[in-house]
Length: 245
Image: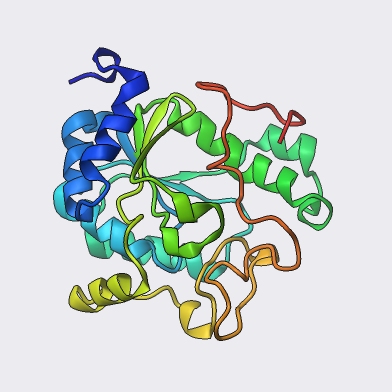
């Protein structure tokens, strides 16, 4: 069924009510059945990404996987993205990079992260994803409630920016993730063993101490907890450099 044939205001609420306690596979099956080729998976190929990528690869190996290559990722992440995609048989991984003109305007010296992390994330993550996601009606994310912060109240299905977002792993904790990784012999991101339970760009990601929150190493020392791609924006809008962030 095409998305424009569905009742947009009620669709996410109805699906969330149906799937809020469902196994991730059931959530994925529902997303694929409802949206088909109008569904994308957004992945950082980070510390826990292998689980959702593996689940999706079993059901739809040609699902478009959108990977934000910000130009400031760890080399280990780029290697992991290439090796994991090949191992899982994912055939449509798309590398989303910042537009040259956006960088020339907002971050010509690649030092914006030192003075304005929100603006840096905006030009390197938000803008490329907003442009790429325009071609889809729904997308999958790897967010989980146990990561804390605003994610503690994360629904399994939500509507944002005119799209339906599925969070198949919202209900899973670290034990379930670790068990799944072990059961399917999935390779860990190489930085996990070095104390990085959540991995983003190298300037803004640090290892964490034992007992700290999973995302404590992201933008450590600031109040920032999200990069902006999950922050509400006007439906269908593609933000402009220098606009509200």
